Image 1: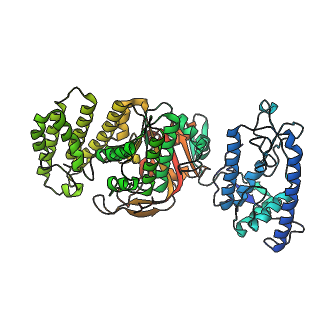
Image 2: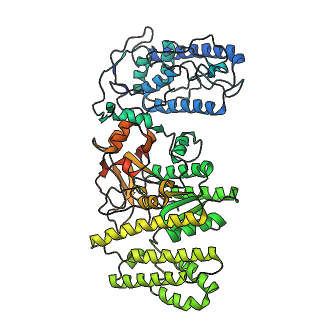
Image 3: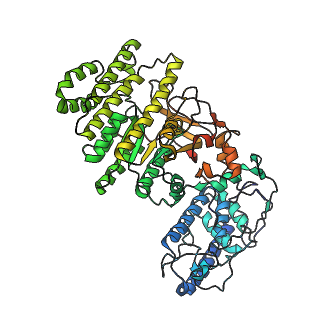
Length: 631
């Protein structure tokens, strides 16, 4: 059975159908007794046909009830999902929905004996009925079971007459449900074409590829890129967390034994990127033993969130407002993630999940965080406390990073040198309590890292480039430290340009967090990138300061990576770049303009060779801006 494909706008008039073949609507024949297209006669006659078909179908299912055998739960779930996808398809492309339904014509499934049929799919134990084969207007799919599998449960094929499909379509025009197919109310105009096709319209294949189809030359000759990408693609059921995750099993296989997974985002602040991160993290926690979510957020803020996750003290929304302030993650989607993580810990006290920030300490390093360092010294090495307090004078606390950057450069450089001396002092005080010492030293290291980063000079391009490289190195070092000291498997959430092996702007980001992690972890690190075709996101008018606000971009233009990816017949999908077919891999190896949007907009697409940046790619057709944090 073919996986459902995303409808194209040309479905109803000379465009691509669900099977990826170009079709032309040649004629719309008159159906005797149905009246004019869209008239009352069509609706009434269609209603009558639907009633007759339903009676016939119900009688048929009762007759074969005794011969049914139970389906495995997973098969039943997949069949239910198929119906749901056809329902969704009917809202946007009725012709494709009918074609998809026709490919499953007359086959129903029971999850257990005696259950009423959920739709036109049924498994029976008798083998005397023919299976559907080639020749129907839908393309005629064979039954989903092999001959060997049919020994225990054979697929019964019952072809529904064309007039039954006409009746169903007629009923759809009036907005009714039919035969538990759950196809909801859709427009009369769109369904007129459905009725015409179901009543016998001729769909003639056009012997040409789409004008936008790309080809690449491989050892096997010239091959179509979209077709090759499609063969590698795995459809995503949804980007929303919760519910069944069977569609993520392919992703689990791609991740394999990786201990650290980088999950990117093509924008800072799109709902679907954020919700997909929660969905993937939940799946990795429950199925692959991951226990840490790392965010492109300050180390100190991450510890504050993790304290809440472990103790339950405080409120998730208040914690998010405090720790995510002034960032694009100050959004409802991250409140949802934090709440889920706290609920998980409440229900799994023996295997808690953790939140870490792997970035430098912006926008602030509060006094409480400095206290994690000085408190250790006061308790274990009080003789060193006066010197430590002296070194932190003028640095503790950093309440506002942007105000701190207003200090003269020479002063910031002096403070950074003193923060490094404080780290060296802590490192010299290792005592018998190794674990407590390790955390104190790491916290002092975060102070030193932050102070060094804040010696940047925005007017000096070389200085800025060096510090951006330093920042990515710091994020990789912090993840590696966490992995070493906790043994946890980590999902690293950051922008594409951080988790990737290479960035789209090497002049500004000469070496990425993903590249540093690969150097340290080898194959134990796996980066997953995101692309999108169109939609809304959060960004700012200026990189330093300013407010995060909504911006929107239209569909990708020809020549961009996203344009070709969006021709694949799934609304949203993912693929393993490393194991893609030759034609797809050849295409993925070539750099093309791709849109990665960060802290400032507008921004032009930059050249990216996807295969050189990521091991796995997720493509979404459309995104919207993330939801504002509620009071």
